[in-house]
Image (cartoon, rainbow, N blue to C red; front, side):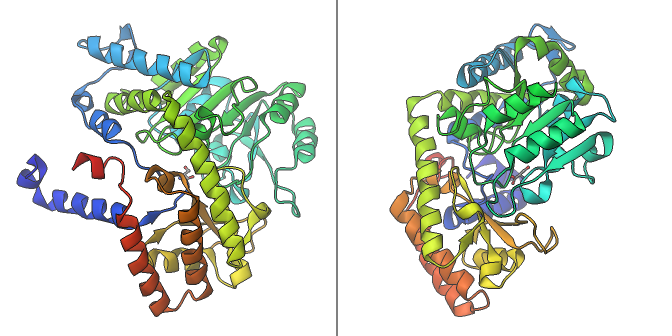
Length: 416
Ligand code: DSN
């Protein structure tokens, strides 16, 4: 019996239920993944007890001799993994990384360009309900109506007109490769900094399956828990010339004591991503997404932009005459976990939506392959063709549970 189940059985029971949910479901939220047992152990370590405001060698509290070793190692591994000169591993989340990146680069009221949220951007790329849209003058760019891919000619036209100080490239619901070369050229032509938010694709970049933004971007922000498979957290990468501004924008600019337990998990995750097998993992994520896309199309679904180059797929549920919300809920009843999402030029609200976002990082972490994706696509198509059919949902759920149990879950199956 664990210490937790003896001392707080109520919380232990909730955690146990979540463990079962994660084992028996097909986790297809494109931004989620399973951290390894080693990442979980480091993240749950005694470093949660320690305050360490400042940076290695320059702390405001005593007792940081081991914190300094830990953070330095995390920084060195991050630099090696992404081929950059500077890494700040303290941001507690992607949103905080983005806030610090803006603070380090521009003043409130300045103009920034970012991808429109309803077309695949992120809240912190200028949504009016977020600090970004409230503090800065964001000019959104969009995707082409027909091709549903970022229109680089339009980005260039807007950049010349708006003269932004930052152009943000990066997305949360964009199934295609992002052209960091073109973004860099446009940004530097208009005197802007190129900031790449690679949160979704960081693992693909680390594994060589997406062009690295490092040679083209002035600042790179990322989360560490998506395709990178680390603990929940953020990070900022840059050249040396921006290091001091970024470090002071993180602390004391926007954060206090760093979450050293998360930094421990990040260091482990970077170490894992530096291993040769991570390249194989990244390749399998992309291959699985392509196989899933093929299977979904064969099942009669329409995919935004016609397919995928990366780890995610955006399904246009209009082709089935249902909303994204209805699709998400029907699939959840069959133990297939995804999230509804707006599609470009969506006629429905951001709460209801017309789209469904599906990703392969977590399924790939369980060892599923291309043939498995075909099976998964078949289940999704079956449920979405009859979203009110209780019989279909129950039959699919039974098959899904049996299938899912056959694949070990990193951090759960190997920690028991
Ligand atoms: N919530 C993240 C995602 O799902 O993409 C973005 O912050």
